[in-house]
Length: 411
Image (tube, rainbow, N blue to C red; front, top):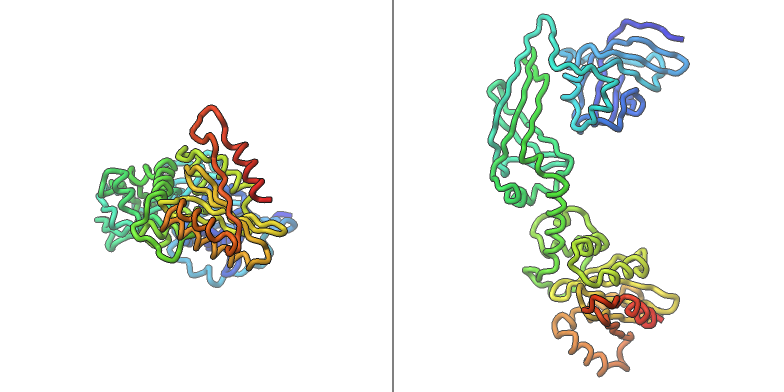
Protein backbone atom coordinates (compact mmCIF):
# COMPACT_ATOMS: atom_id res chain seq x y z
CA UNK A 1 0.00 0.00 0.00
CA UNK A 2 1.33 3.43 -0.94
CA UNK A 3 0.79 6.62 1.06
CA UNK A 4 1.65 10.02 -0.37
CA UNK A 5 3.36 12.34 2.06
CA UNK A 6 4.20 16.01 1.62
CA UNK A 7 6.62 16.36 4.49
CA UNK A 8 10.25 17.49 4.21
CA UNK A 9 13.27 16.13 5.99
CA UNK A 10 17.03 16.68 6.28
CA UNK A 11 19.25 13.74 5.37
CA UNK A 12 23.03 13.31 5.61
CA UNK A 13 24.87 11.77 2.65
CA UNK A 14 28.47 10.53 2.84
CA UNK A 15 30.73 7.88 1.32
CA UNK A 16 29.18 5.43 3.82
CA UNK A 17 25.58 5.95 2.77
CA UNK A 18 22.42 7.91 3.62
CA UNK A 19 21.49 8.89 7.19
CA UNK A 20 17.77 9.48 7.75
CA UNK A 21 18.09 10.08 11.47
CA UNK A 22 21.04 10.28 13.90
CA UNK A 23 22.51 6.79 14.16
CA UNK A 24 20.51 5.28 11.27
CA UNK A 25 22.39 4.80 7.99
CA UNK A 26 21.40 2.99 4.82
CA UNK A 27 24.26 2.01 2.55
CA UNK A 28 24.24 3.23 -1.04
CA UNK A 29 23.52 -0.34 -2.14
CA UNK A 30 20.16 0.05 -0.38
CA UNK A 31 19.22 2.89 -2.74
CA UNK A 32 18.24 2.86 -6.42
CA UNK A 33 21.51 4.61 -7.34
CA UNK A 34 24.27 2.40 -8.87
CA UNK A 35 26.70 2.43 -5.93
CA UNK A 36 29.48 0.76 -7.94
CA UNK A 37 29.62 3.71 -10.34
CA UNK A 38 30.16 6.67 -8.00
CA UNK A 39 32.00 7.57 -4.79
CA UNK A 40 31.08 10.42 -2.44
CA UNK A 41 34.08 12.41 -1.19
CA UNK A 42 35.61 10.43 1.65
CA UNK A 43 35.42 11.82 5.18
CA UNK A 44 32.86 14.54 4.34
CA UNK A 45 29.16 14.63 5.30
CA UNK A 46 26.67 16.65 3.24
CA UNK A 47 23.18 17.78 4.24
CA UNK A 48 20.31 17.57 1.72
CA UNK A 49 16.73 18.74 2.14
CA UNK A 50 14.31 16.17 0.72
CA UNK A 51 10.56 15.76 0.24
CA UNK A 52 9.00 12.43 1.22
CA UNK A 53 7.12 11.42 -1.91
CA UNK A 54 5.74 7.98 -1.09
CA UNK A 55 6.19 5.01 1.21
CA UNK A 56 5.49 1.34 0.53
CA UNK A 57 4.72 -0.20 3.89
CA UNK A 58 5.08 -3.85 2.84
CA UNK A 59 8.50 -3.33 1.30
CA UNK A 60 9.50 -0.54 3.71
CA UNK A 61 10.53 1.37 0.60
CA UNK A 62 10.78 5.18 0.66
CA UNK A 63 10.68 7.43 -2.41
CA UNK A 64 12.16 10.92 -2.02
CA UNK A 65 13.01 13.96 -4.09
CA UNK A 66 15.84 16.39 -3.31
CA UNK A 67 14.60 19.95 -2.79
CA UNK A 68 17.87 21.63 -1.78
CA UNK A 69 21.42 20.31 -2.02
CA UNK A 70 22.73 23.09 0.27
CA UNK A 71 20.05 23.81 2.90
CA UNK A 72 20.82 26.66 5.28
CA UNK A 73 18.88 25.22 8.22
CA UNK A 74 19.91 21.64 9.05
CA UNK A 75 19.34 21.50 12.82
CA UNK A 76 16.10 19.54 12.42
CA UNK A 77 18.11 16.44 11.48
CA UNK A 78 19.13 15.97 15.13
CA UNK A 79 15.49 15.61 16.24
CA UNK A 80 14.17 13.50 13.38
CA UNK A 81 12.75 10.07 14.17
CA UNK A 82 11.57 7.16 12.07
CA UNK A 83 7.89 6.34 12.53
CA UNK A 84 8.12 3.42 10.11
CA UNK A 85 10.97 1.07 9.20
CA UNK A 86 12.95 1.87 6.06
CA UNK A 87 14.89 -0.79 4.19
CA UNK A 88 15.48 1.02 0.92
CA UNK A 89 15.36 4.50 -0.60
CA UNK A 90 14.54 5.54 -4.13
CA UNK A 91 15.76 8.97 -5.22
CA UNK A 92 13.94 10.83 -7.95
CA UNK A 93 16.37 12.07 -10.59
CA UNK A 94 19.25 14.05 -9.08
CA UNK A 95 20.49 17.29 -10.58
CA UNK A 96 23.92 16.51 -12.03
CA UNK A 97 24.95 20.18 -11.85
CA UNK A 98 24.98 19.83 -8.06
CA UNK A 99 25.51 16.09 -7.55
CA UNK A 100 28.82 16.14 -9.48
CA UNK A 101 30.28 18.34 -6.75
CA UNK A 102 29.73 15.65 -4.12
CA UNK A 103 31.46 12.79 -5.92
CA UNK A 104 35.20 12.13 -6.16
CA UNK A 105 34.89 9.36 -8.76
CA UNK A 106 32.07 8.36 -11.07
CA UNK A 107 31.06 6.72 -14.35
CA UNK A 108 28.68 9.24 -15.79
CA UNK A 109 27.29 6.97 -18.52
CA UNK A 110 26.03 4.57 -15.84
CA UNK A 111 24.42 7.44 -13.90
CA UNK A 112 22.45 8.94 -16.82
CA UNK A 113 19.15 7.16 -15.94
CA UNK A 114 19.32 8.68 -12.44
CA UNK A 115 20.28 12.31 -13.15
CA UNK A 116 19.06 15.46 -14.83
CA UNK A 117 22.09 16.51 -16.83
CA UNK A 118 21.68 20.28 -17.12
CA UNK A 119 24.65 22.60 -17.57
CA UNK A 120 23.12 25.50 -15.70
CA UNK A 121 20.34 25.77 -13.13
CA UNK A 122 18.34 28.95 -12.63
CA UNK A 123 16.92 29.46 -9.15
CA UNK A 124 14.52 32.45 -8.88
CA UNK A 125 15.52 35.04 -6.32
CA UNK A 126 19.04 33.70 -5.90
CA UNK A 127 22.23 35.18 -7.32
CA UNK A 128 24.67 32.66 -8.78
CA UNK A 129 28.26 33.78 -9.39
CA UNK A 130 30.84 31.79 -11.34
CA UNK A 131 34.60 32.24 -10.99
CA UNK A 132 37.59 30.63 -12.66
CA UNK A 133 41.21 30.87 -11.48
CA UNK A 134 44.54 29.75 -12.89
CA UNK A 135 47.02 29.00 -10.07
CA UNK A 136 50.71 28.13 -9.86
CA UNK A 137 51.21 25.80 -6.91
CA UNK A 138 54.59 24.54 -5.68
CA UNK A 139 55.03 20.77 -5.40
CA UNK A 140 56.34 21.34 -1.88
CA UNK A 141 53.07 22.97 -0.79
CA UNK A 142 50.76 20.09 -1.79
CA UNK A 143 50.10 17.07 0.37
CA UNK A 144 49.78 13.63 -1.23
CA UNK A 145 46.82 11.73 0.24
CA UNK A 146 44.89 8.62 -0.71
CA UNK A 147 43.41 9.27 -4.14
CA UNK A 148 44.74 12.78 -4.75
CA UNK A 149 46.59 15.84 -3.49
CA UNK A 150 45.42 18.65 -1.21
CA UNK A 151 46.63 22.19 -0.56
CA UNK A 152 45.48 25.45 1.03
CA UNK A 153 45.17 28.67 -0.93
CA UNK A 154 43.41 32.04 -1.05
CA UNK A 155 40.77 32.71 -3.69
CA UNK A 156 39.70 36.36 -4.23
CA UNK A 157 35.99 35.50 -4.14
CA UNK A 158 36.28 33.91 -0.69
CA UNK A 159 36.89 35.67 2.60
CA UNK A 160 39.23 33.05 4.06
CA UNK A 161 41.72 30.40 2.88
CA UNK A 162 40.22 27.23 1.44
CA UNK A 163 41.60 23.69 1.15
CA UNK A 164 41.48 22.42 -2.41
CA UNK A 165 41.74 18.83 -3.58
CA UNK A 166 42.76 17.39 -6.95
CA UNK A 167 41.61 13.79 -7.36
CA UNK A 168 43.77 11.05 -8.88
CA UNK A 169 43.12 7.39 -8.02
CA UNK A 170 46.78 6.43 -8.68
CA UNK A 171 48.12 8.55 -5.82
CA UNK A 172 49.02 7.04 -2.43
CA UNK A 173 49.73 8.83 0.88
CA UNK A 174 53.26 7.35 0.83
CA UNK A 175 54.06 9.52 -2.21
CA UNK A 176 54.24 12.46 0.19
CA UNK A 177 57.84 11.47 0.95
CA UNK A 178 58.97 11.28 -2.70
CA UNK A 179 57.55 14.48 -4.17
CA UNK A 180 60.90 15.11 -5.81
CA UNK A 181 60.46 12.05 -8.03
CA UNK A 182 57.22 13.35 -9.54
CA UNK A 183 58.57 16.88 -9.90
CA UNK A 184 61.58 15.50 -11.78
CA UNK A 185 59.50 13.07 -13.88
CA UNK A 186 57.12 15.87 -14.91
CA UNK A 187 59.94 18.35 -15.46
CA UNK A 188 58.27 21.03 -13.32
CA UNK A 189 58.58 22.38 -9.79
CA UNK A 190 55.05 23.81 -9.85
CA UNK A 191 51.58 22.61 -10.74
CA UNK A 192 49.27 24.44 -13.13
CA UNK A 193 45.92 24.35 -11.34
CA UNK A 194 42.53 25.30 -12.76
CA UNK A 195 39.84 26.17 -10.18
CA UNK A 196 36.15 26.53 -11.06
CA UNK A 197 34.06 28.05 -8.29
CA UNK A 198 30.31 28.64 -8.05
CA UNK A 199 28.90 30.77 -5.21
CA UNK A 200 25.22 31.12 -4.42
CA UNK A 201 24.05 33.48 -1.66
CA UNK A 202 27.58 33.63 -0.21
CA UNK A 203 27.86 29.87 0.00
CA UNK A 204 30.10 27.59 -2.06
CA UNK A 205 27.84 25.54 -4.32
CA UNK A 206 30.49 23.99 -6.52
CA UNK A 207 34.28 23.82 -6.35
CA UNK A 208 36.20 21.83 -8.96
CA UNK A 209 39.99 21.70 -9.02
CA UNK A 210 42.11 20.10 -11.78
CA UNK A 211 45.76 20.01 -12.84
CA UNK A 212 47.32 18.69 -16.04
CA UNK A 213 50.44 17.65 -14.11
CA UNK A 214 48.48 15.63 -11.55
CA UNK A 215 46.53 13.99 -14.38
CA UNK A 216 49.87 12.80 -15.83
CA UNK A 217 50.51 10.70 -12.72
CA UNK A 218 49.02 7.61 -14.29
CA UNK A 219 49.54 3.85 -14.12
CA UNK A 220 52.51 4.07 -16.50
CA UNK A 221 54.35 6.65 -14.39
CA UNK A 222 53.59 4.83 -11.14
CA UNK A 223 54.68 1.55 -12.75
CA UNK A 224 57.97 3.15 -13.79
CA UNK A 225 58.47 4.32 -10.20
CA UNK A 226 57.69 0.84 -8.89
CA UNK A 227 60.19 -0.78 -11.25
CA UNK A 228 62.88 1.84 -10.67
CA UNK A 229 62.79 1.24 -6.93
CA UNK A 230 63.04 -2.52 -7.41
CA UNK A 231 65.93 -2.23 -9.87
CA UNK A 232 67.71 -0.04 -7.31
CA UNK A 233 67.74 -2.94 -4.86
CA UNK A 234 70.42 -4.67 -6.95
CA UNK A 235 72.95 -1.95 -6.15
CA UNK A 236 75.04 -1.90 -2.97
CA UNK A 237 73.28 0.04 -0.18
CA UNK A 238 74.90 3.19 1.18
CA UNK A 239 75.30 1.60 4.62
CA UNK A 240 76.26 -2.07 4.92
CA UNK A 241 74.57 -3.87 7.82
CA UNK A 242 77.19 -5.64 9.96
CA UNK A 243 75.27 -8.38 11.76
CA UNK A 244 72.25 -8.72 9.47
CA UNK A 245 72.45 -10.52 6.14
CA UNK A 246 68.88 -11.68 5.47
CA UNK A 247 66.02 -9.20 5.01
CA UNK A 248 62.29 -9.31 4.45
CA UNK A 249 60.83 -7.01 1.78
CA UNK A 250 60.04 -4.12 4.15
CA UNK A 251 63.53 -4.24 5.65
CA UNK A 252 65.33 -4.27 2.31
CA UNK A 253 63.51 -1.16 1.05
CA UNK A 254 64.40 0.58 4.32
CA UNK A 255 68.06 -0.24 3.67
CA UNK A 256 67.98 1.59 0.34
CA UNK A 257 65.50 4.43 0.74
CA UNK A 258 65.67 6.94 3.58
CA UNK A 259 61.97 7.67 4.09
CA UNK A 260 59.13 6.44 6.32
CA UNK A 261 57.41 3.30 5.04
CA UNK A 262 59.97 2.98 2.22
CA UNK A 263 58.14 -0.03 0.77
CA UNK A 264 55.68 2.33 -0.92
CA UNK A 265 53.72 -0.34 -2.76
CA UNK A 266 53.84 -2.91 0.06
CA UNK A 267 55.58 -5.43 -2.19
CA UNK A 268 56.73 -8.80 -0.90
CA UNK A 269 59.59 -10.93 -2.21
CA UNK A 270 57.28 -12.60 -4.73
CA UNK A 271 56.37 -9.20 -6.17
CA UNK A 272 60.06 -8.31 -6.46
CA UNK A 273 60.83 -11.58 -8.23
CA UNK A 274 57.90 -11.08 -10.61
CA UNK A 275 58.96 -7.52 -11.44
CA UNK A 276 62.57 -8.51 -12.09
CA UNK A 277 61.51 -11.34 -14.38
CA UNK A 278 58.97 -9.13 -16.20
CA UNK A 279 61.71 -6.56 -16.79
CA UNK A 280 63.91 -9.27 -18.30
CA UNK A 281 66.95 -8.53 -16.14
CA UNK A 282 67.42 -12.10 -14.85
CA UNK A 283 68.42 -15.15 -16.86
CA UNK A 284 67.52 -17.65 -14.11
CA UNK A 285 63.83 -16.73 -14.24
CA UNK A 286 62.60 -20.33 -14.37
CA UNK A 287 64.68 -21.29 -11.33
CA UNK A 288 63.32 -18.38 -9.28
CA UNK A 289 59.72 -19.06 -10.28
CA UNK A 290 60.09 -22.77 -9.52
CA UNK A 291 61.55 -22.15 -6.07
CA UNK A 292 58.99 -19.48 -5.20
CA UNK A 293 55.95 -21.28 -6.56
CA UNK A 294 56.71 -24.97 -5.99
CA UNK A 295 59.21 -25.24 -3.15
CA UNK A 296 58.92 -22.34 -0.72
CA UNK A 297 57.35 -23.19 2.65
CA UNK A 298 53.93 -21.52 2.58
CA UNK A 299 54.01 -20.05 6.09
CA UNK A 300 57.59 -18.76 5.80
CA UNK A 301 58.69 -15.51 4.17
CA UNK A 302 61.08 -15.55 1.25
CA UNK A 303 64.10 -13.61 2.46
CA UNK A 304 66.42 -11.38 0.43
CA UNK A 305 70.19 -10.85 0.41
CA UNK A 306 71.80 -7.58 -0.61
CA UNK A 307 74.45 -6.74 -3.19
CA UNK A 308 77.10 -7.83 -4.05
CA UNK A 309 75.17 -11.12 -3.74
CA UNK A 310 71.62 -9.99 -4.44
CA UNK A 311 69.34 -12.96 -4.29
CA UNK A 312 66.57 -14.83 -2.49
CA UNK A 313 66.63 -17.44 0.25
CA UNK A 314 63.89 -20.07 0.05
CA UNK A 315 62.91 -22.47 2.83
CA UNK A 316 61.83 -26.02 1.99
CA UNK A 317 60.66 -28.15 4.92
CA UNK A 318 60.58 -31.95 4.78
CA UNK A 319 59.54 -34.74 7.14
CA UNK A 320 63.13 -35.33 8.25
CA UNK A 321 65.14 -32.42 6.87
CA UNK A 322 64.91 -28.69 6.30
CA UNK A 323 66.54 -27.16 3.23
CA UNK A 324 67.61 -23.55 2.74
CA UNK A 325 68.11 -22.63 -0.92
CA UNK A 326 69.98 -19.48 -1.93
CA UNK A 327 69.35 -18.44 -5.51
CA UNK A 328 71.33 -15.39 -6.61
CA UNK A 329 70.30 -13.18 -9.51
CA UNK A 330 72.14 -14.25 -12.68
CA UNK A 331 74.45 -16.57 -10.75
CA UNK A 332 75.95 -19.77 -12.13
CA UNK A 333 75.02 -21.85 -9.10
CA UNK A 334 72.33 -22.50 -6.49
CA UNK A 335 73.44 -23.03 -2.88
CA UNK A 336 71.59 -25.55 -0.70
CA UNK A 337 72.10 -26.04 3.06
CA UNK A 338 70.38 -29.07 4.59
CA UNK A 339 69.75 -29.58 8.32
CA UNK A 340 68.27 -32.61 10.08
CA UNK A 341 65.00 -31.68 11.79
CA UNK A 342 66.41 -32.67 15.18
CA UNK A 343 69.34 -30.25 14.90
CA UNK A 344 67.57 -27.23 16.34
CA UNK A 345 64.41 -25.30 15.48
CA UNK A 346 63.74 -23.82 12.06
CA UNK A 347 64.52 -20.36 13.47
CA UNK A 348 67.87 -21.55 14.86
CA UNK A 349 68.77 -23.15 11.54
CA UNK A 350 67.81 -19.99 9.69
CA UNK A 351 70.07 -17.99 12.01
CA UNK A 352 72.96 -20.33 11.15
CA UNK A 353 72.32 -19.86 7.44
CA UNK A 354 72.38 -16.09 7.96
CA UNK A 355 75.85 -16.43 9.52
CA UNK A 356 76.99 -18.44 6.50
CA UNK A 357 75.65 -15.79 4.09
CA UNK A 358 77.68 -13.25 6.05
CA UNK A 359 80.84 -15.36 5.60
CA UNK A 360 80.21 -15.60 1.84
CA UNK A 361 79.67 -11.85 1.63
CA UNK A 362 82.81 -11.00 3.60
CA UNK A 363 85.20 -13.68 2.35
CA UNK A 364 83.81 -14.81 -1.00
CA UNK A 365 82.23 -18.01 -2.24
CA UNK A 366 85.43 -19.93 -2.93
CA UNK A 367 86.81 -19.34 0.56
CA UNK A 368 83.52 -20.50 2.06
CA UNK A 369 83.61 -23.72 0.01
CA UNK A 370 87.15 -24.39 1.25
CA UNK A 371 86.01 -23.67 4.82
CA UNK A 372 83.13 -26.13 4.47
CA UNK A 373 85.37 -28.90 3.13
CA UNK A 374 87.85 -28.36 5.98
CA UNK A 375 85.17 -28.49 8.70
CA UNK A 376 82.78 -30.98 7.15
CA UNK A 377 82.78 -33.36 10.13
CA UNK A 378 81.99 -30.69 12.74
CA UNK A 379 79.29 -28.71 10.90
CA UNK A 380 75.58 -29.36 11.71
CA UNK A 381 74.49 -29.22 8.07
CA UNK A 382 75.21 -30.48 4.58
CA UNK A 383 76.07 -28.13 1.74
CA UNK A 384 75.45 -28.60 -1.98
CA UNK A 385 76.12 -26.37 -4.95
CA UNK A 386 73.86 -26.94 -7.96
CA UNK A 387 75.56 -25.50 -11.04
CA UNK A 388 73.49 -23.87 -13.81
CA UNK A 389 74.98 -25.81 -16.68
CA UNK A 390 74.68 -24.27 -20.16
CA UNK A 391 73.36 -21.06 -18.59
CA UNK A 392 75.13 -18.94 -21.21
CA UNK A 393 74.05 -21.03 -24.20
CA UNK A 394 70.89 -19.76 -25.80
CA UNK A 395 70.14 -23.01 -27.65
CA UNK A 396 70.18 -25.34 -24.62
CA UNK A 397 67.62 -24.84 -21.85
CA UNK A 398 69.53 -25.33 -18.56
CA UNK A 399 66.40 -25.56 -16.40
CA UNK A 400 65.52 -29.31 -16.73
CA UNK A 401 69.06 -30.35 -15.78
CA UNK A 402 69.15 -27.85 -12.92
CA UNK A 403 65.77 -29.05 -11.60
CA UNK A 404 66.89 -32.70 -11.69
CA UNK A 405 70.09 -31.97 -9.77
CA UNK A 406 68.24 -29.77 -7.25
CA UNK A 407 65.74 -32.52 -6.50
CA UNK A 408 68.65 -34.90 -5.88
CA UNK A 409 70.13 -32.42 -3.41
CA UNK A 410 66.79 -32.22 -1.58
CA UNK A 411 66.57 -35.99 -0.97
